[in-house]
Length: 184
Image (tube, rainbow, N blue to C red; front, side, top):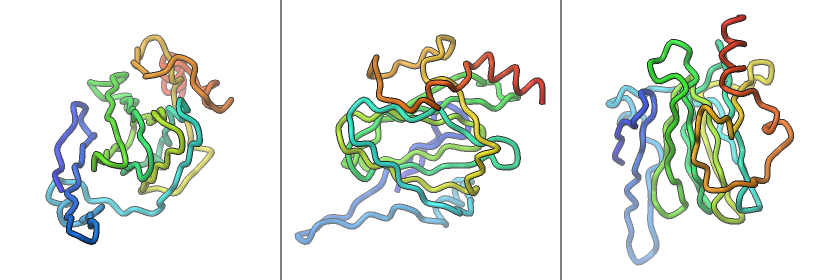
């Protein structure tokens, strides 16, 4: 397992190292000691599975805030996604900046996303399964996010007309998100 910092502070790309033989392969997905060596010491409290049946599905850009802010460890177990994270930490020098990573069932990569990042993804093929660990329980009253196609973010999504939930389509713009932060 190789852990390397991403372009945005609080993001880590994790490359897994499958061991193969004539029977198949074995891959360590999580190693608490190795994570601690990189300063990534978390108590995972939930593991979730998201399944999207159609290519071009976008889920996001979600986060939980306040005392319920969560760290995520994300991997793809079936299919391929364009995974995106936006820095929504109000005091961060990279507030409003985003980055992305390609996660597939075969590229043996995961992404660690620290607290305060909005997260979303676009499926690149039918029948995608995403599994992720979080270090906080789901708290709908502390849920938020920003709109996937906010013009100020300029995220280069690989699709123009996504399949989305009504809820995700109605998330605030980055400017609206900032105003709400300032009011609290």
